[in-house]
Length: 343
Image 1 (cartoon, rainbow, N blue to C red):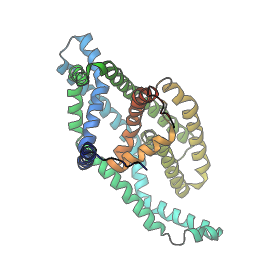
Image 2: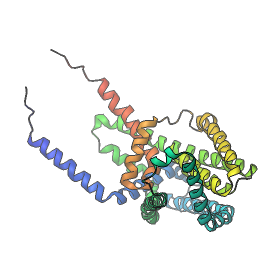
Image 3: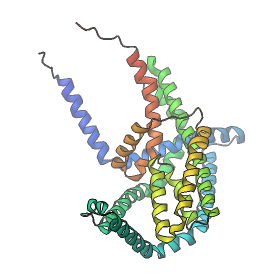
Image 4: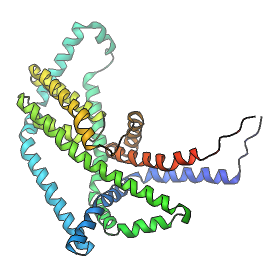
């Protein structure tokens, strides 16, 4: 049996990897803000280029105009959402003790009717379990709030990235050996295209599916239709898992507040999800991004454990770009290798 030789270079590489991983772990929130900032810069760069070319303004002034426009749009959207959702949210908050009591009673009846199910949950305290779940959710949101507290830095970083995008792009290309620069330029251009395509498609999908869900629930006179529509739009950023959480939350709240409407809730979500999967997403994502389900979910769990809830939100575009690297660099490299000889 041949011994495996461990060279000094291998030891140095291993130690370097461990140190880099430790540094990345302890500075992960700084990395997250930086990644978001650079992503903002990549998204804004084409808009800034067009604005600068058409109006013949300095890039810094064009960046300020874009920032003002974004602030007006975001502010208008938030104000509109507040006036639409505020009353329902206040009502839901006031009725939360009643809803919790109704759910407890409903589960108790289910357990009385199906004793075998009760045995499965005999050691589970529903109240404590729910409380722990809520605490865990808010821990995730707390991590998100920490990152959002640095949003101003991310925006500033994004604006500077967009302003100097051409210089940064050229400098990054020059960091590669001359023989690899064309490939590096191609890969970086494709990653930027993928990020912008994902963001554009995601905004369209969020608006359409959130509006359709809210409209369907409003037509069927379901309570808290605006809240459920908003949750559908926001949580739709998280593939597969997000809509499951929304449907579960909406179903439980409806069961506790107006059980007769649960069939309409499930019907509306069933129809809108079929429309999203078979019509909306194929149209907005056509020729853009196709992500395999299982690797994406695993990647979401990894980033979620590393960065909190914001890690889950940034997982899809990050995975899309990593997949582009895999397809454009790794696979061609492997396919060009000679097959090993046996014997």
